[in-house]
Length: 514
Image (cartoon, rainbow, N blue to C red; front, side, top):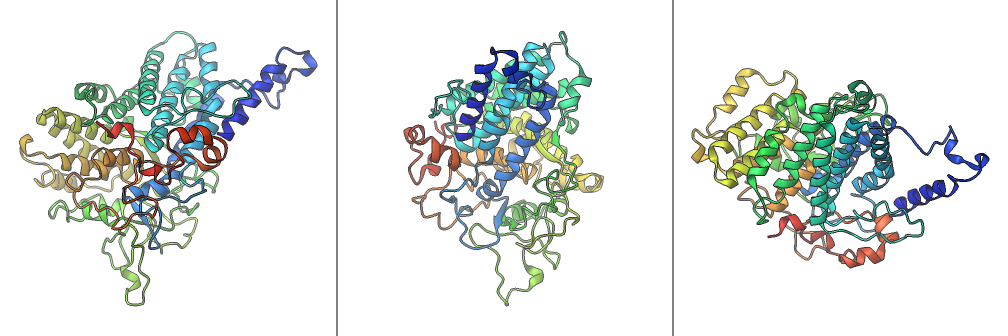
């Protein structure tokens, strides 16, 4: 937690001198103000949170088999980790440091100045940050995260159950704030800082309801307190169409303002699409039903055939394997070769993005699963169909999928059964996996863990044949906390939750347990 300590110490210094003589009052320094209005804080926080997912997707993406590493025996492909490394710690870094007190200051400024719209957005962003962090790591530092004691150097972890309760509380408070029209509420002013929804309070309120649906559905099939009716109600209060999708776009002009997934940054050059996603889309799993989204999302080999990598196997470069049959990177180039900055991308793999954070399709699949578990298959089938339709018509594809192709896919009984009674859980979860491929890593990973990586639910999903050496024969369940804060500066607190065990990353999370 070194970054948090540094920020708290800085805040402590400001407080120490705030009541001193005028010539010592550093709070009045125009070059380094301690009070910054919410509008200037919001956009960077939104950007950092999205980039945090993209950074860590390089690792989580291999756990969930969105893509795999070009070389054989990779630790992350085998559900392991790299010891003494910050790999997989970017969401942690962004929530506690780049967001951190900046988000607290945003919320404080909004309260003090009756900017209820900024307050609602800030609270929703805070809830989203905790959701991302606990989905990835399990127990996290919550109640002591922004402790004002400048001498504090150990930050204790809170249970995931407590974190979930706080997410719900923050979402409800955000909705209340977003409902207010008094004070200094103004779409024009909110749009100054809001790069996601451009100041649209209604969409932010729907986002908060969507997050309530996400966090409540995490408890599905495991917790006795799980209530599918709540999930359905939250989804019904959330996104109404693709127009509500939370998307972040980038300027894409250089390596500092482009999407992390863009060719100009080259961050995904070692990764090839997984064999699993290819099987879901080429008709292997869905009995000959070829997905019209495949050519818009995936990359074919040089011979035009779609292929993917299996966990830990890597890309064969043997002379006996023709170059034109090898798996390529997300831009269609040779694996582990830097693409040209102006390489045309597809789907979300462009310099400008966009990068989805939450979508209408995702929420419809959440509703479908909740209704299915409730036993209301009619509602489940309707939501399932809307989820597929929504993704097929997503702005991410532009006009790339014709009405005829959509109709053919939606009338294929392998994809959408004729009757609600024929709908299966694995259909729902597999279509959700496709709709979240390439961006919904945390939600996908949470689903896989809830269902114990079951190939009955995720048809043809294959765990690594050999796990990472520290796994003791178990699949991964969590990212280890960020090395340079926790394993260097917060050892005592980390030890209390078993974080020093070499197989800590295989310890099941609270939401996956009965």
